[in-house]
Image (tube, rainbow, N blue to C red; front, side, top):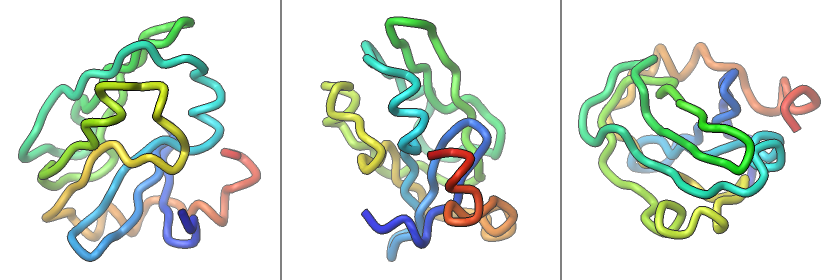
Length: 119
């Protein structure tokens, strides 16, 4: 996956614009830091507002609650990574969103600008 069009969050999520909206996944550093992911649960589907709880991720080390970085509508999930979390890599998307608020998307930092910090 080309990272040129990625935006990132402090929670270690990448956001990439697509023809149909945005896809969201975990950055390489977060995937490596979490280690073995045992379980992931999507907390909502449909309309969601920036900052609302999105995912619960259980690893061997801890349980993490991840918030959604932008408002929009979750229209698709990558069932493969929920059924088999070991398939989750920095290139695997987790959710697809539409009706994303462009202002929220634009205010996120570009991956290339902070790549050295996030890996």
